[in-house]
Length: 240
Image 1: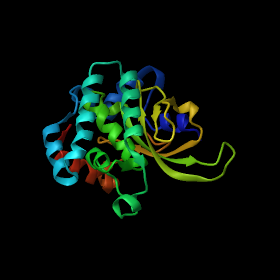
Image 2: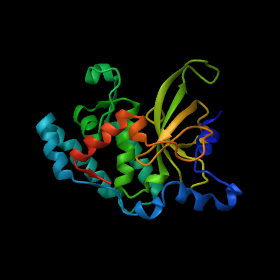
Image 3: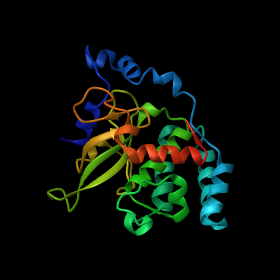
């Protein structure tokens, strides 16, 4: 099953013709979150700078300054420019590394502060940092999902795959997502990423599985690492 087909199928439930009422049902499935999500998330960069200096030293604060500067530059720009700017910033700023080497743990999801502080991260860390950035820029939560996938490696005909995570941006409720990925610098529609097979997707409002109708669970309950990240984000100045 392609990323485009299965990710699009995990959207909100439709009892009538999907093309006729999908927008309304999307709002209902997310708890009428459209009005709630109109206000952008916020990051208190003063809190973040203090935490960064305490943990990683004065030099690391420059990474926070660069991130805040990027978000200021992108504020009010078209979403397409925001997506490209955020995707490029973290793909260039963070060097890929394995959790075991960086954190001494088999699987650790870091906050943007932690990723920028050490200058390293893996696929989850890139995706989380991009998600947080787009929320601060005012993109509604229902248009963003962290998508856990199996990524085929070794070429088009390879049978080998590995666990991977990307950020999906949905221009509208019935649109295919655009994929922000640390493996490929170019942002591509899901139809052009047949190397990715989705397993599930989530944001701070819900969790979806391919073929299911609507949000299936509280993501912080099903994914303990995600709940832990959200708590640490609040401690570091993030508000949504």
